[in-house]
Length: 256
View 1 (cartoon, rainbow, N blue to C red):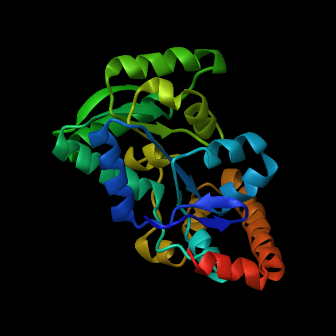
View 2: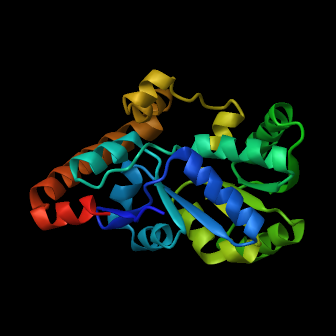
């Protein structure tokens, strides 16, 4: 098992997509819980501003690089990560594996109409998938405990959270264990993509690390300024870390 890499004070697992999927399936087989954290440039910036988010992500059992920019920063800062493990790609892989292995799943998140549309499309794409239950993502903090209990009662072995940060991370940290799900994976806006509400960037844009720009072009008023601000902050963070990186720190990461 490869030792974790430290990037901006956050410990990440240097896993490939296949290795991450294998860990998830092992957790289900062995009856232990695995909480998955995914980080991109925006989340790493926000973790510095939001201690609750930072604590929730750091408490996950596996933390992988969801954004290509994080992989590039890892190379620059001598904390190499083998590849990007995009949250939506991991989500789809796990749905396929769950269908094949008879693993039951629960979907929590999105608006009710988006959730319903996603469930229809998931049923078409994975007809043998066992869906233990689902619920929209609009609820008060006071309802979290009851929702976790409902998930536990459903017997779901994998839980997918289609909610924004930091809500999904905070729910996972506080109630992930209570749900009884063996794998808990926060998938952000993936429900919207599976439902056909938003489009995912073409593969070429993803390889160039421009998925954020594709999304911003779809929703410029909501996402444009946010992405530009967080991306600029991430570049600055990386530059400062590069300047500060000592030969000792570099050799320590290389020795893992």
